[in-house]
Amino acid sequence: MPLSHDSRYLKGGPVAKRIIAAVREDAAIAKAAGFPPKLISITVGDTAAVDVYVRNQRAKAQLAGIDFEERRFPATITSGELEAAIHGLNADPRVTGIIIQRPVPAHIPIRTLQAAVHPLKDVEGMHPASIGNIVYNQLDLAPCTAAASVELLKETGLDLKGLEVVIVGHSEIVGKPIAFLLMSEGATVTVCHHITRSVAAHARRADALFVAVGKPRLIKADMVKPGAAVIDIGINSEIGPDGSSRIVGDVDTESVREVASWITPVPGGVGPITVAILLRNTMVALSRQRALYEATYGTADRLAAE
Amino acid sequence: MPLSHDSRYLKGGPVAKRIIAAVREDAAIAKAAGFPPKLISITVGDTAAVDVYVRNQRAKAQLAGIDFEERRFPATITSGELEAAIHGLNADPRVTGIIIQRPVPAHIPIRTLQAAVHPLKDVEGMHPASIGNIVYNQLDLAPCTAAASVELLKETGLDLKGLEVVIVGHSEIVGKPIAFLLMSEGATVTVCHHITRSVAAHARRADALFVAVGKPRLIKADMVKPGAAVIDIGINSEIGPDGSSRIVGDVDTESVREVASWITPVPGGVGPITVAILLRNTMVALSRQRALYEATYGTADRLAAE
Image (tube, rainbow over all chains, first blue to last red; front, side):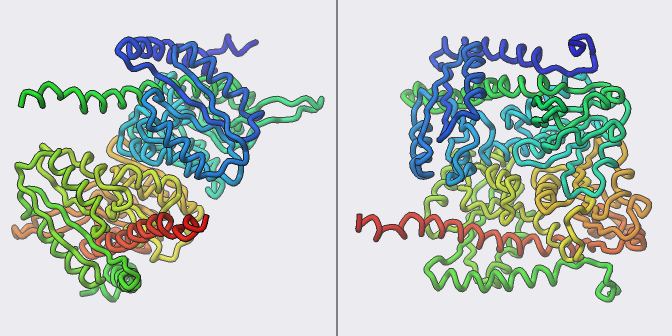
């Protein structure tokens, strides 16, 4: 594997490992103080497509000392019944974080579910209020893939202040949150998408280029500024000439790595960090719940003394 | 007044008038259906600085047939007391919208107050959940100044899809919301700020340039692309050579109007529309409250029949 010998590759594994080790310390401290972290994973209907992700989340949660419990609901459940189940989890003090595995069946509006999760238990950072808090510069709890992408950029050591950043892809949970996260860090951010007149013209002036559109090998070497950092968030399945399938990103890695100073491999770049961020978010959510608890009850002595 | 004869000026007055006329119709219909709109304005401490704004809001609300009531609190009030007052207004079915006039005294955290307003009564569009909803492409309730600025751009008739937009200023309630509003409309958006390496280089490639930084005459003619639309959101007080003070924007209007195809006068551009948007937001908020009411009670027959 030549990857491991090439400093141009921004690999997610070591970053994820570091984050999980820090989470493990936090989780142990919280547990000792009477606040054990616990994640509930919700899957609806046919879960074959997500099983591998859920298994991975469970394994990483165990590694971090975070309790992980699965709740599986049938495809026939109504949106109202699911919301009620989520409200029940919101009200359960043993549950400190809720994950809604996607996709859900077509008759369930995913946004309604995401909004039903209490913002203080929203470890995926998907609730509108969580998104809004990022805009208000509260950056510690963001959608996992967006936060993972920013972590990788930070690995380069580049100064984010004044950095020219171009993001290709303006989805609500990846492209846009990356934009606010980096605006808050002082970067100058441009967001491009499928209607942009010339993505290439924008991409070529980027010190850091994020790509999240789901188009295999969209970004070629001539679209990248020499010395740039390229963060590839795409995950596409490609059938090779021999009929075998493999995973490729939105960036033509082989050609772009000759131009860029840093590039993320796919797989092995953003992906591994995403789960680590989910666990880090779990501890952020827990510490907010704990702060609320302590603000509510911590004044009991004072009240009794009054 | 040469302004009124020059088609290059994007004047806010006519746009505001049109919006208020539409609100007036909506308000009358809602009132007839048993849902009268009512705004509560909250001022804290010394209100001299905001009195002129509040008076204007009251006058425009009356014009639109929206009830407007002022609540004044002393500068000595605690943040907790104010939050309790807001929670009381949230729970009052006669109150359909709450405005927190800024500034508030330094000991009151404005963001806590904004977050205390129920999202369904957040006519200023300042609650984190309101901001997050814009990111999720629900564009009908946005911070007033941001929405007003976008209204003025729409007046040009330019196709927003693929439009190259540059925003100078990345505040949470103006620059950033303009960015999401226009991303959702298909524009390619760049957000610049005081750390940006070359604001001029970005500004010069913009089809539409928004400026909201509070620096008098920051944008000169040589920073503007010929034919661009320039939306000036700055409001600065300038002392003239004769010692008199006047209001100027962030754009050097006299020189820029020779280059730009459209430019907003200051005052008289974005300002008048801002209040109109506040009233339009009031009707959006009311219709969401009404939808919730009807979803809750409209099923009574069905429940009784089961």
